[in-house]
Amino acid sequence: MGTNLQSPAGFHLAAFGQNGFDYLTGNAANLVGDFVAIQVLSQAVVTVTVGVGDALTSVTVPAGMTIYGPFKSIDLASGTVLAYRA
Image (tube, rainbow, N blue to C red; front, top):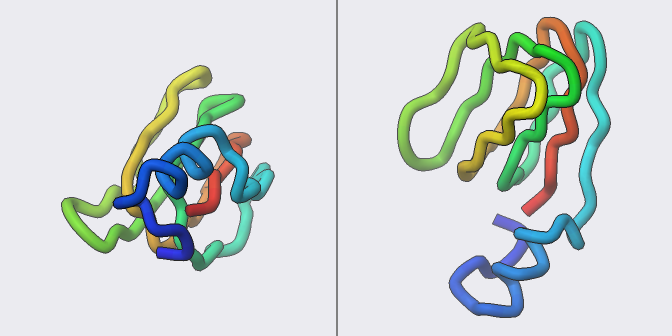
């Protein structure tokens, strides 16, 4: 990951979005990078790959929900999300 999440300073930077975010809407192309959270602004269908844990494939996520994890890629089929960088 781009930020050392093991250190308190690195963790807090990522937790509060200080490393930036990507705004994705509609049928966005596959976004590759290190991400710590996906905030759903309007109901979205997402596919994500992760470094640790289970990937999600074509999962519908309701508006207002934020999912957290060490995401490696995000593919948006529909909806609008903010993808927070690690």
